[in-house]
Length: 137
Image (cartoon, rainbow, N blue to C red; front, top):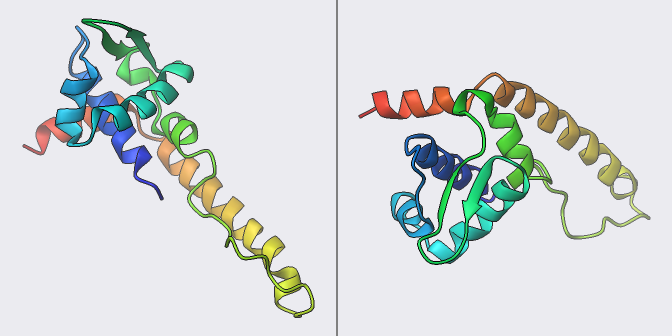
């Protein structure tokens, strides 16, 4: 996994706790990452309809819908479209009895893992995550 999901949830949680919105520098400070990198994550969330933005000087981000309406599975699908498991970049040897079938077998395992993960994430909302985070203090 790339860490984009964790950063996206962190950024969304900051916005969920900030109804007036927040700028990318403020969010990046909370996530403890570079604002330029974070803006790439925020752009995915804007394009996915979870975040709205007012760009330019004094620009801010805010949630496009209530935290109760944002399922963690929705966030995951936006920022990790390839799923939790990726195939090897090496092309298996087709002349090998294992190599010739490995790609298809691995794809089945990866699909099953993605379905199970999305099913689990669908049970939780951003509002629940924010509540748990605030209680953890």
